[in-house]
Amino acid sequence: MQRLLALLVLLLLPFALSAQAARQATAAPSALPHPQVVLHTTAGDITVELYPDKAPKSVANFLQYVREGFYSGTVMHRAIAGYMLQGGLYTRDLQPKRTHSAIASEADNGLSNLRGTLAVARGADPNSGTSQFFFNLVDNRRLDYVGNQNGLTWGFAVFGKVVKGMDVVDKIAGLPTRALGPFANDVPNPLPVIDSAYVIGEEAPARAASAATPPAAAPAAPATKPAAKKGTKG
Image (cartoon, rainbow, N blue to C red; front, top):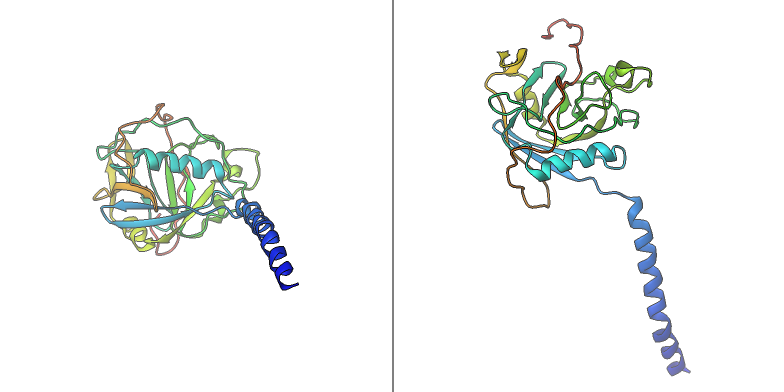
């Protein structure tokens, strides 16, 4: 009898293991991993966590530029204290790099432009985002999606957040600013450079000179500054 039970266990064990493996394989896709990217800048490292489950197009777009080495040698060209810090397109001499085609806005994904979040920078057209991004320095809920009536109500698509190095973001945002190159103001002095960007767990990419298509004539993040607050520079 004991021998018969032992044989039954041996016969049933492979089926039990197969069923367990099938359950694990089925459960895996429901929990998408949140990749992390390190921006190694002249001011320090900034680590961001991305949300492919909430903003798949924005994350895929950003990761493509990272893996191509596009961001190496670009600068944080726009800093507005108490508002945002923007980068991802211009070289050290403030020349725009060639980008891929623009992506559709995912601003209606339910994520809010809170302090420390990373969002897609764009022009007046909600669907004009390419390589540029910006960090929210404060809770900028007025940049959230309200409706699809126009570019203002569309808001700006959040696709990640800073998980390490927010002090570096604040340090860059606190630099004095000036007019330089094509910009009338808000250019940090000295210019913070992204020396490299890479996905944690992946090999760092080689530097890329350009991508597929030229940038839009006037790419931008939020088009206007917030109303000046007491004790805060506008």
